[in-house]
Image 1 (tube, rainbow over the protein chains, first blue to last red):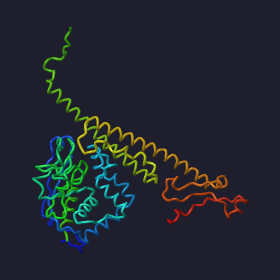
Image 2: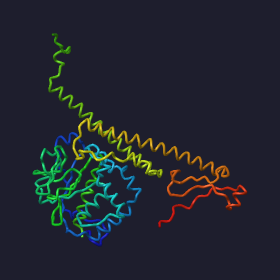
Image 3: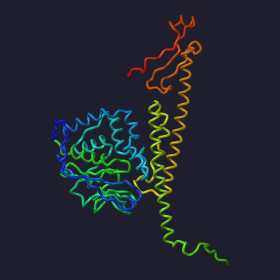
Image 4: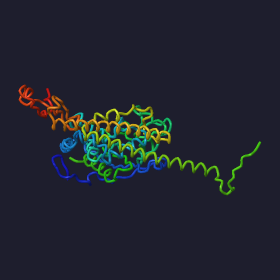
Length: 228
Length: 172
């Protein structure tokens, strides 16, 4: 059992769910083999971060120096995301993959900055595994998550904060609407926030990223959300 | 007016739908191949940066690594054949530039190492010559320098030696 002052491994049963594979639109599956979405529903223990989480982030800060940041892109998981970014028209030297972006932030700020529990949990997951995890409010979603291309005029999210998705943009969507652009933060209307009771964590899998890393990322985030 | 006829037997002429399917399959195969090439080039570019870092010359690659600028359409999407070719070509150009820079840096370092050897062997022939650690591809900000032993006396007597400076200046 994990707790704020407990150094032992957290209990995996605490998250209480299994990671599931999302659906992938046919054209994406055909063009980008290996692309997948994996998600996990997890309860949120509360908005405030825990001393245990802060301590883990501090420990991780010591593991990432300048040399590691430069050489990170040659490691298998970040390299896989960099290649995939190129495949979908993103430049990983401009739009940094999250795994690299957090390490660069750590260099700039001198450590992994702790904020609220949700942000800390997602940060912990990406730093420990290299696989980025995003969180949606499970109660705002309609059915399982998946990946597809946006149609002309479609909006990401709903309400005033919804942004327009260009035709053909790859989006994360449920049965009703797009909730996030691929590799971007979820729309404000669907993102997990302070009042979220249950979150749907998801990770984008690309060719070259081992399944075990993805599962570990989701579980790491889920456990961090429930511990304490 | 003459009609151009297909010389193949009727049974070997594909239906229009089949031709389109074959063309689509060929294009898809080309896109797969381009994505493979892009992944390889990206890996090689990352390795070039890592090599530059290991040899203490990451600055040398800054211009080669820097992207030309954010593209107009930088939303994640499926790229067509032409777009994938453009990505592949841009990466190949950057990789070529990075390798040329690394090669030039390697050559300069080799020359600096040679000079240091000569300084150590014949210090009196290299009076006051300085070689920076950085130019040798070594970390730190010290220098190898030929100085007279015992100051003015050594200068007059022709006693020369190679000294290694103690390192980086203290932060102010």
